[in-house]
Amino acid sequence: MTIDSLYQTFGNIFYRFGAIVLFILVWQLACSTGLAPETFVASPMVIIKTLYQYALDGSLYKNTIISLSRAFYGFILAVVVAVPLGFMLGGWFKSFERIIGPLLTFLGQFNPFALFSVFLLLFGIGEFSKVAMIFWVSIWPLLYNASLGVKTVDPGLIKLARSMGMGRIKLLTKIVIPSSASFLFSGLRLAAGTAFFMLIPAEMMGASRGLGWLIINAQVNYQIPKLYTGTLVIVVLGIVIDYFFRFLEKKVVIWKEAQNL
Amino acid sequence: MWLAKTIFVKYSVLVFLLLLWELSGVFNWVDQAFFPSLSTTVETIVSMWSKVHLFMHLMVSLCRVLVSLIISLILAIPFAFLFARVLPTFFSRIEALLRVFSIINPYCLFPLFVVFFGSGEIAKISVLTWVSMWPIFFSTLAGIKNVDPLLVKTAKSMDAGPITIFFKVVLPGALPSIFNGIRIGVEMSFFILIAAEMTGATAGLGWIVHSASALNQVTMVYGAGLLIVVLGVFLNRSLNFLRSGLFFWKEERDPIAGITGPLVGAKRISNTTLAIMAAVFVAVLSIGLYEIYRAEVMLNDPTVIPEYRVWTE
Image (cartoon, rainbow over all chains, first blue to last red):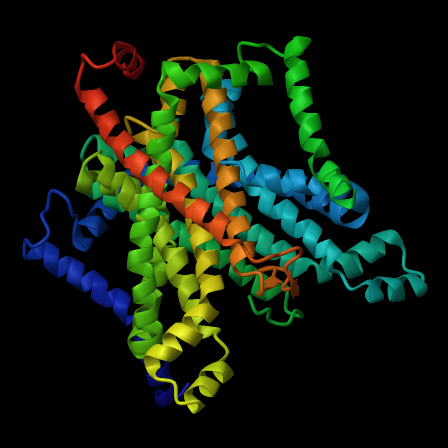
């Protein structure tokens, strides 16, 4: 890399992210000059200090791991159930899909919070009610995208493969899965995003550990630096999860042309 | 006949499930204490009408969504037009920052807003505004960008001024996209509203669910939950109805499949229907504002309605 291109890259980065850096600087300045009252706003420096302190005593790590594992279990359960089901609905039981499709979209529109209290009633206040909630919210995008992916496979390709004597399993692994992969990945990304998104209010309402609990507890006890730190961790994790799935899609689905979304 | 058949196919499974729910109560398949039947739930909703001032809570919830929608429209649309048409370079510099703002999990902002504004209406309205603002803003931007440049050029060649171009070409071209943003914004804010009402509120549907579960009123949890679900679906359906009526000329485009085609059965919405919908909007807004005020009074005045106090405590 020449100096010139290096310079250009940095210029590009600054052009795109300069506003973020500026925002943080203004925030810090407003706090240190006393323009933003300390009782309401924690400065970036204080947030970093608090982050360091909680990272040292392990409480942040513990709560993050608990939150992530809840989101992970619910998400994995949803993947295991929804992807095969979506494939079957989109591929083999088309008439059944016509009947059940409207119901699935209807269920997907349910407000999950109306259900959360019901989940609490049915499953108790333990881990299972939270995992069930995550499962519920992440199953719909997966199901929708999996069945849509199978439905949009080019029928010509299937006929061609059939005429060359391809078996069912090979058809699935060589034709159906690769050509519906980009749908699957966007379903995965949406579902993982929603799972982490909905986990926070679920933890706010009925949990005694986890990131959602951490910030609601900080608010109740009026620990402003802790509140900001918890929020920052949640925001960063949300962004990381989103980018992880985008990255994965780019690396795995290399044959797909860019879609104009 | 064809229509009846489609409707039958569409709703048969739903009706079957509802029937199953009802029969589970009749034949006592599941414990009624934890899973009340459909008829019990509906009965509870009816009894809640007088018992817990259901109408007030309903109007309070709806009004919060509508007020935040109005505020976010006022904030998002002018800024989107400003950034897209007047200050595109400036916008490309701050776009990353705005995108980061828009993907912040709104639930973790709620405690922050409570710290800033207290636990009153302002905190709830501002978190809802925050949530519905970003989809409206970004879809307005996309709508303006996707206006066919050829149309703008044609208008220019016919000697149309910038104001005429804006009102006759750009705005109508961007409207379907703007409306799509409004739809997403309303849905999101209704989602978040229930959570916000569950964590810190003294009125509203989410509050009913929360306090009913705290007081172990199982049927009431189901009743309020059913009402929230029905209301959410109703909001969604009426927005879709309005969209297909207003933009009947627009080709439908699935955001994921990218399949284009004209909207099926889309017809121009009649002026009477539009007027009725606008009247309902204004009525809900004004009744809701009054009910928010009434809820506040009831909460602070111990003499007004005793059972309301009992229910809150």
